Length: 186
Image (cartoon, rainbow, N blue to C red; front, side, top):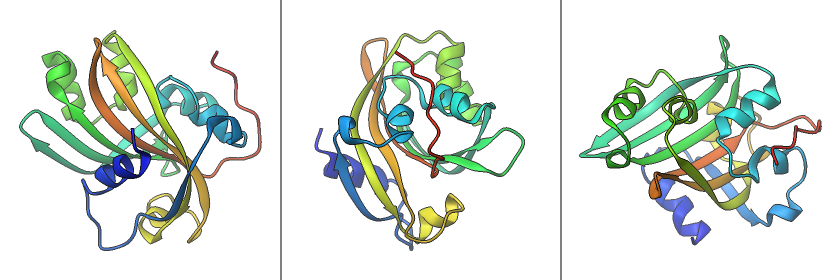
Protein backbone atom coordinates (compact mmCIF):
# COMPACT_ATOMS: atom_id res chain seq x y z
CA UNK A 1 0.00 0.00 0.00
CA UNK A 2 1.19 3.48 -0.83
CA UNK A 3 -0.02 5.53 2.19
CA UNK A 4 -0.22 8.77 0.21
CA UNK A 5 -2.38 7.27 -2.55
CA UNK A 6 -4.61 5.34 -0.12
CA UNK A 7 -5.13 8.36 2.15
CA UNK A 8 -5.97 10.58 -0.82
CA UNK A 9 -8.40 8.03 -2.28
CA UNK A 10 -10.29 7.82 1.03
CA UNK A 11 -10.35 11.61 1.55
CA UNK A 12 -11.59 12.04 -2.03
CA UNK A 13 -14.67 9.92 -1.22
CA UNK A 14 -16.19 12.97 0.51
CA UNK A 15 -14.70 16.19 -0.87
CA UNK A 16 -15.24 19.09 1.47
CA UNK A 17 -14.87 22.83 1.06
CA UNK A 18 -12.52 22.83 4.06
CA UNK A 19 -9.35 20.82 4.43
CA UNK A 20 -9.67 17.64 6.48
CA UNK A 21 -5.93 17.26 7.07
CA UNK A 22 -3.40 20.10 6.86
CA UNK A 23 -0.34 17.84 7.02
CA UNK A 24 0.41 14.21 7.67
CA UNK A 25 3.42 11.97 8.01
CA UNK A 26 3.78 8.18 7.81
CA UNK A 27 5.25 7.01 11.13
CA UNK A 28 6.76 3.55 11.75
CA UNK A 29 4.73 1.65 14.34
CA UNK A 30 7.83 1.28 16.54
CA UNK A 31 8.23 5.07 16.71
CA UNK A 32 4.57 5.87 17.40
CA UNK A 33 4.28 7.37 20.91
CA UNK A 34 2.00 5.90 23.55
CA UNK A 35 -0.89 5.83 24.01
CA UNK A 36 -1.38 6.13 20.23
CA UNK A 37 0.81 3.10 19.50
CA UNK A 38 -1.44 0.84 21.58
CA UNK A 39 -4.55 2.51 20.14
CA UNK A 40 -3.54 2.14 16.48
CA UNK A 41 -0.73 -0.39 15.88
CA UNK A 42 -2.63 -3.68 16.14
CA UNK A 43 -4.91 -5.97 14.12
CA UNK A 44 -8.04 -5.53 16.23
CA UNK A 45 -11.21 -3.61 15.53
CA UNK A 46 -10.95 0.01 16.60
CA UNK A 47 -14.40 -0.32 18.19
CA UNK A 48 -13.01 -2.73 20.81
CA UNK A 49 -9.79 -0.76 21.34
CA UNK A 50 -11.56 2.60 21.68
CA UNK A 51 -14.12 1.15 24.09
CA UNK A 52 -11.35 -0.36 26.22
CA UNK A 53 -9.37 2.89 26.36
CA UNK A 54 -12.35 5.12 27.12
CA UNK A 55 -13.99 2.52 29.42
CA UNK A 56 -17.38 2.88 27.73
CA UNK A 57 -19.20 1.62 24.69
CA UNK A 58 -19.30 3.87 21.64
CA UNK A 59 -22.06 5.06 19.36
CA UNK A 60 -21.65 5.68 15.64
CA UNK A 61 -22.81 8.88 13.98
CA UNK A 62 -22.82 8.73 10.20
CA UNK A 63 -21.97 12.18 8.82
CA UNK A 64 -22.24 11.30 5.13
CA UNK A 65 -22.75 8.19 3.05
CA UNK A 66 -23.13 6.89 -0.49
CA UNK A 67 -24.13 3.55 -1.89
CA UNK A 68 -22.69 2.90 -5.36
CA UNK A 69 -23.99 -0.52 -6.32
CA UNK A 70 -22.41 -2.86 -3.75
CA UNK A 71 -19.82 -0.30 -2.64
CA UNK A 72 -20.83 1.50 0.57
CA UNK A 73 -18.92 4.65 1.46
CA UNK A 74 -19.32 6.49 4.74
CA UNK A 75 -17.83 9.25 6.86
CA UNK A 76 -18.36 8.71 10.58
CA UNK A 77 -17.44 9.68 14.09
CA UNK A 78 -17.54 7.39 17.10
CA UNK A 79 -18.86 9.01 20.28
CA UNK A 80 -18.67 7.97 23.90
CA UNK A 81 -22.00 6.26 24.51
CA UNK A 82 -24.80 8.70 25.24
CA UNK A 83 -22.63 11.79 24.74
CA UNK A 84 -21.43 14.08 21.97
CA UNK A 85 -17.76 13.47 22.86
CA UNK A 86 -15.96 12.35 19.69
CA UNK A 87 -13.30 9.68 20.18
CA UNK A 88 -12.64 8.67 16.55
CA UNK A 89 -13.15 9.95 13.01
CA UNK A 90 -13.37 7.49 10.14
CA UNK A 91 -13.70 7.15 6.38
CA UNK A 92 -14.87 3.76 5.14
CA UNK A 93 -15.02 2.06 1.73
CA UNK A 94 -16.87 -1.27 2.09
CA UNK A 95 -17.44 -3.92 -0.59
CA UNK A 96 -20.77 -5.30 0.63
CA UNK A 97 -20.52 -8.40 -1.60
CA UNK A 98 -18.09 -9.84 0.98
CA UNK A 99 -20.71 -10.18 3.75
CA UNK A 100 -24.11 -11.81 4.26
CA UNK A 101 -27.40 -10.02 3.67
CA UNK A 102 -27.96 -9.77 7.45
CA UNK A 103 -24.58 -8.06 7.97
CA UNK A 104 -25.18 -5.82 4.96
CA UNK A 105 -28.59 -4.77 6.29
CA UNK A 106 -27.24 -3.99 9.75
CA UNK A 107 -24.33 -1.96 8.33
CA UNK A 108 -26.71 0.00 6.11
CA UNK A 109 -28.97 0.56 9.15
CA UNK A 110 -26.15 2.78 10.51
CA UNK A 111 -27.02 2.21 14.18
CA UNK A 112 -24.04 0.08 15.29
CA UNK A 113 -20.28 0.60 14.80
CA UNK A 114 -18.87 -1.51 11.96
CA UNK A 115 -16.52 -3.55 14.14
CA UNK A 116 -19.32 -4.44 16.54
CA UNK A 117 -21.52 -5.66 13.64
CA UNK A 118 -18.75 -7.90 12.29
CA UNK A 119 -18.00 -9.28 15.76
CA UNK A 120 -21.65 -9.93 16.64
CA UNK A 121 -22.25 -11.72 13.32
CA UNK A 122 -19.11 -13.83 13.76
CA UNK A 123 -17.69 -12.71 10.43
CA UNK A 124 -14.27 -14.30 9.99
CA UNK A 125 -12.07 -11.24 9.69
CA UNK A 126 -8.45 -10.17 9.61
CA UNK A 127 -7.29 -6.58 9.89
CA UNK A 128 -4.21 -5.57 7.93
CA UNK A 129 -2.56 -2.43 9.29
CA UNK A 130 -1.42 -0.36 6.32
CA UNK A 131 0.19 2.70 7.93
CA UNK A 132 0.30 4.81 11.08
CA UNK A 133 -0.09 8.53 10.40
CA UNK A 134 0.79 11.61 12.46
CA UNK A 135 -1.91 14.09 11.46
CA UNK A 136 -2.18 17.85 11.77
CA UNK A 137 -5.88 18.59 11.65
CA UNK A 138 -7.30 20.88 9.02
CA UNK A 139 -10.34 23.05 9.77
CA UNK A 140 -12.88 20.33 8.90
CA UNK A 141 -11.27 17.66 11.11
CA UNK A 142 -10.74 20.13 13.97
CA UNK A 143 -14.43 21.01 13.89
CA UNK A 144 -15.64 17.39 13.60
CA UNK A 145 -13.40 16.18 16.41
CA UNK A 146 -13.94 19.21 18.65
CA UNK A 147 -10.23 19.94 18.90
CA UNK A 148 -8.17 23.10 18.47
CA UNK A 149 -7.25 24.16 14.92
CA UNK A 150 -4.01 22.55 13.70
CA UNK A 151 -3.91 20.15 16.65
CA UNK A 152 -1.87 16.99 16.15
CA UNK A 153 -3.13 13.47 16.62
CA UNK A 154 -2.55 10.05 15.11
CA UNK A 155 -4.48 7.76 12.83
CA UNK A 156 -4.16 4.65 10.73
CA UNK A 157 -4.93 3.24 7.32
CA UNK A 158 -6.11 -0.36 7.40
CA UNK A 159 -7.86 -3.02 5.35
CA UNK A 160 -10.31 -5.50 6.85
CA UNK A 161 -10.53 -8.89 5.17
CA UNK A 162 -13.86 -10.71 5.58
CA UNK A 163 -13.77 -14.46 5.01
CA UNK A 164 -10.37 -14.07 3.33
CA UNK A 165 -11.40 -11.31 0.89
CA UNK A 166 -10.37 -7.63 1.12
CA UNK A 167 -13.64 -5.98 2.09
CA UNK A 168 -13.12 -2.68 3.87
CA UNK A 169 -10.58 0.12 3.48
CA UNK A 170 -10.38 2.52 6.41
CA UNK A 171 -8.92 5.78 7.58
CA UNK A 172 -9.30 5.99 11.36
CA UNK A 173 -8.11 9.07 13.26
CA UNK A 174 -8.08 9.11 17.05
CA UNK A 175 -9.16 12.12 19.07
CA UNK A 176 -6.19 13.46 21.04
CA UNK A 177 -5.43 11.06 23.92
CA UNK A 178 -4.13 11.41 27.44
CA UNK A 179 -0.67 10.03 28.12
CA UNK A 180 -2.11 7.03 30.00
CA UNK A 181 -1.13 3.54 28.91
CA UNK A 182 -3.64 1.39 27.07
CA UNK A 183 -4.17 -2.27 27.83
CA UNK A 184 -2.09 -4.50 25.58
CA UNK A 185 -4.12 -6.67 23.18
CA UNK A 186 -1.44 -9.22 22.38
